[in-house]
Image (cartoon, rainbow, N blue to C red):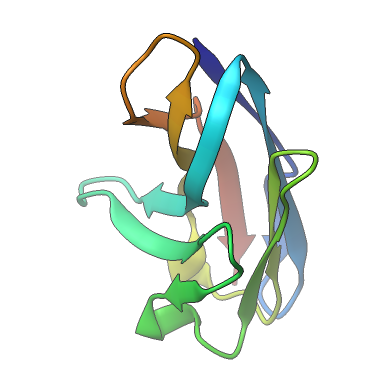
Length: 120
């Protein structure tokens, strides 16, 4: 089984910064993509940014130039540095990993979510 432990959410003013961190725990054989999605009230969950084990990144147009995703493969950890935050970034942010655990099939795992609130 795989558990994702998230930290770093909070309340900041517009223009501020936050850093989200997530570590994957458990009997992980391989962790492929890792990343972050978010869901605002009344909206569907959407991609924020993902990163492959080789370091290739993919991010939503709305966060390009403001958010940076990075990864530590040895620690099975992913970090999202969020700068120039806007009120529309307010959402519950979910960590995810596409991984294969010992004696399990490859699947996507999700964290419980960490709240990010940006005041105007």
